[in-house]
Length: 72
Image (cartoon, rainbow, N blue to C red; front, side, top):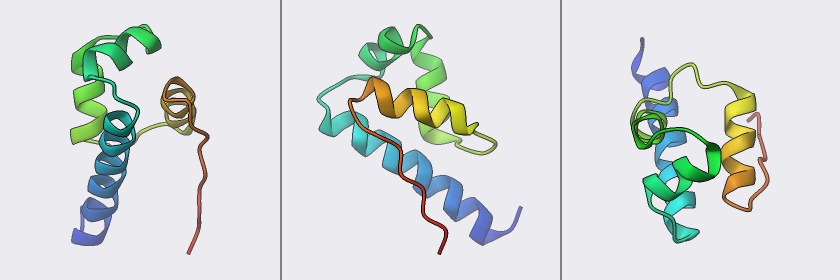
């Protein structure tokens, strides 16, 4: 994996963590909303490679947000 690809995955994880924190939720609370485990939320935030679009949509919905994708 090249630097650029790794950086993009890192940015996705950071964006998800920031969205969760701005919603005032812990990883555990978000996991409960998504009917998953805290470890799954941690993995998403720290290793966002190969994350499915459907997973991103579910996380956004659980945070009371909507997913917006931009190709630049």
